[in-house]
Image (tube, rainbow over all chains, first blue to last red):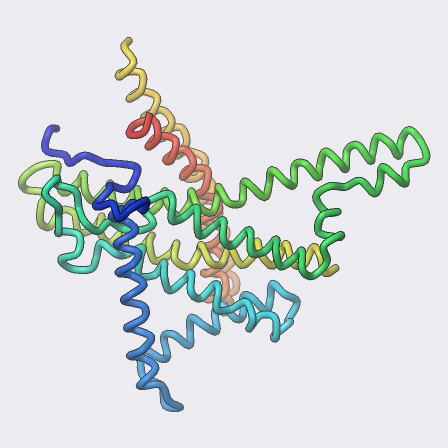
Length: 259
Length: 76
């Protein structure tokens, strides 16, 4: 069992520039961003009324997210178009980042201390927590802008306590306050569940392929292929699932303030 | 039993027991979707994306146990 490589949960350190530590998943995220920028510039040149194959694919993705946003926001087209870029950016980033290990050569580059320079970005818990925290915090800021008192009132439910006239009302009001505290816990659980889902799937895929590959000499070549396919497929599915769930959470928060 | 053996046993049990629930749940989601598509094939495309999202939510408890097993194995 000694030839199975070391699996590390935190991202490995590559270099240190002043107070900032460069880790391998951060470098890979930069590469993914670079790929997206180049891709955007390339597709901008060829955009037209008669769409190319790439343009058709992107239009399909855009209309999928727009339809979901419109359904979640009670057919408010203007607001849906305003929110679209956030979720589309998350999707495009994850679409490439989840399948980073499929890019040739990148994952084979190692430093002198035998650590890989690039590592699939979502297999580092920090990135997925950052994405989930960004979405949830943004949704709360938007709800606060729309109607600050109502949004705070949704979590700290003091109003029924002030209106209480009898013992029964008082008990109900106390129950409401308890439910409000549970809602606050639920908001933290949203961040945890969104980030853990993405991280778990991608990291499990990586580790699975790595362990199958290094089991024995004859499992180096053809044997890992179905597992690579499985991990690529789950990466693709979770690139869709993360923004769709984030969209539902955000629209739920906005709806609770508007109604 | 020493600490190392307990750790390995805990990680294995955590993943093994934690995988039962999501497997049953995902199976139920898939079975119901197939049943519905069989009755009404036109809405198959619409149901498929909903099914994937529902499955991902069912899967989350399994993923929690996976994360805990990974933490037990590599971080503690």
